[in-house]
Length: 574
Ligand SMILES: [Zn+2]
Image (cartoon, rainbow, N blue to C red; front, side, top):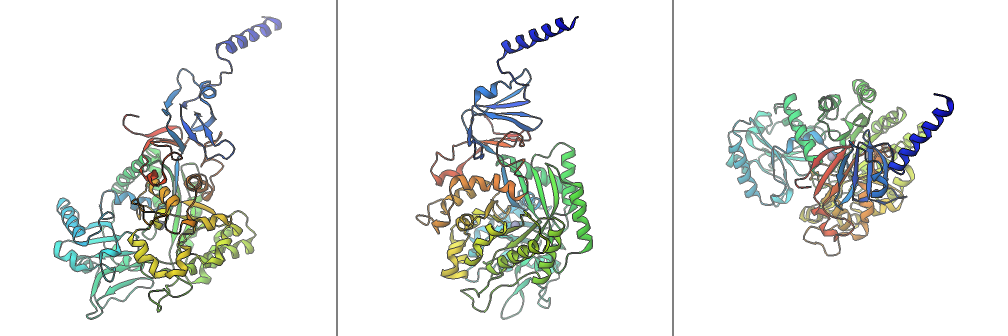
């Protein structure tokens, strides 16, 4: 062939292709059509269709534009006009614990103590082989007037087997006599630092109420550890549960149990990835416990960071617990509790040591997440982050504070100013009896004005990353999203919402569970919105959130969950 002939033939080929499909693009692996897509991309908030190649979005646009990516082997997903959103990122979970909670007894929806005991007895009878009866979810108002559980109720129903139940907030436990006996807890056992074995004021006998992790540890260490296979089995159930709710990425905030979030937990997930079973992306913070960060821990953090830093598994983040919770007067407050002026809570870390460790992690570019609920703990975390940035000159470290239940007014602007992420869990502010009759009286009428001050923090330039704290509350983002917008119970109390000025808009609530959450994990360039080049993580849901009354947001059903371009969950009939 002469050069001329070659030229003409290539022109002919080009011409034929152009006629066959005007503007035809290289085929996508998958396209999604007919969606009402809310992209969370401020420049192009709405679209109809998506094209995916190699797990990433290659185009976002109209049905017509995306149809050009359809080749003979392209998988076509029909959104049937449903709302499509980026996959949900939950910024605060305890995934292994949550996964186990799926198979254990959950008392979350039980409000009555006798009913709780009846259900426990039934559960224990149905699980005769379990050496321990384990579960969670009881709440303080079940035990008037002290608000603390008592072993006698459990002993009456289940005397022969140890029973050990975590409260709904993960800060207090309810044990029966058998559990106390196996843990060698008697009236002579001293309270461990940072924890309390609650005792009968007359006899000094332990009542079966165990406060905070340090005391929980005395019992936990005698509970047989689940095997690796049992853990994997639980995680599989957890992954499925997450995908069914639209969750495609989680930030694991250490464990509820000391040491969780360490390399052994990532290894389990890595095993599931290798067998093709990983359908949720993980960002994992390793829990640091007082009194010190050890050299072995520092080494492990480096190891995790080197080994796991990809789209699916990333470690090398740390989590500190600075205080407890307001319900049990263990959150560290600047001023005494309103209903118990002798108490103002206490810090779990020595403040100077904590600051020093934060500065050291900051210097190593390790992101720090700090559990801080009371205004004193929150202030210390902000001080430590500010000090680290000044000392090291670091920029954009995005250190985080987890929970922020009651912030001092003076500290609200510091989130924006210092670039500290406000990682908050909207469902924790659910204004039911637990919140209004137990939480609120503890802080009193002045401080209650800044209860879960989402809007104030955001208005002052802070980034809100939303999550659940599963298994403390449901992993479903939809009731949380509803509460972020309404601050009302599902039956509409209180009218107008609790502290309504702290509500956020629906768009901001969605952003808290998507783009802002991605930002909180340093992933906003690859995730959190539906834009070309980002990961193809998205969901289709049963209702258009912008079209339903806010009190119905919580009813949202997930119809389709796609992670990395692969269908991870599809509801029946969709
Ligand atoms: Zn938590």
